[in-house]
Every structure is written in C-alpha cells, then in structure tokens.
Length: 105
Image 1 (tube, one colour):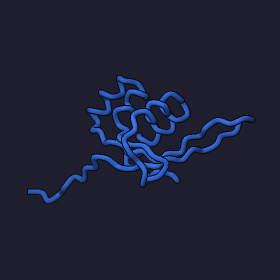
Image 2: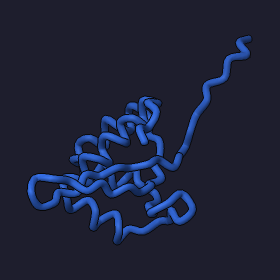
Image 3: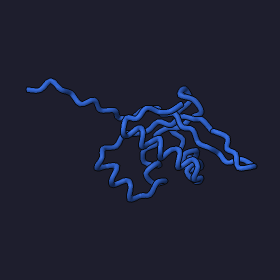
C-alpha cells in the first residue's frame, strides 16, 4: 500500500493588489488580504457558470486590510465585486491560489 498522501488545503489567506484608477491614467495599488476557499476542479468548473462575481462570492470567505483583521464581511465583498479592477485582481489571485502559484508581493 502506498504511503503517498495528497496535501489538501481547505482555505488560506492570500494577498491582493488591486490597481485603483487615478487621474492622469495612473493607478494606486490597494493592498489587502482575502481568505480563499479551495474548490476542486469539478466544483470550480460548476462555479464558472455563475460568472466572475458569482464565483468570487462563493470562494471568498473573509476580507481585511491585513492578515490579522480578515473576517467574514459580505457587505465589503459585495462592494468590491462591483468594480472590475477589484474583480480582475481577485480572479487572478484566485487562479494563482488554485494552481499553487506563489503570490507576488
């Protein structure tokens, strides 16, 4: 019998950098932290049918400015998902989380 064990992560804190548009074509990075819930490939495929905001609502289980203040906050999640620059940053970060690609800080 094999001694090999699959390491399964249920959730993890993940840094996010969202480029918030500014005057003059510039951006200001908003750095914050979310807690992502891991989904299997089958679950992820099913969530894709909900669109990017629907998927992100299902996988974000906490949000905060730092690791220490991450908490479940449905109002904050709904607010940030209204804006494309946040959705793109979160979606890309979730892809990295799913695939085990180290976050860039």
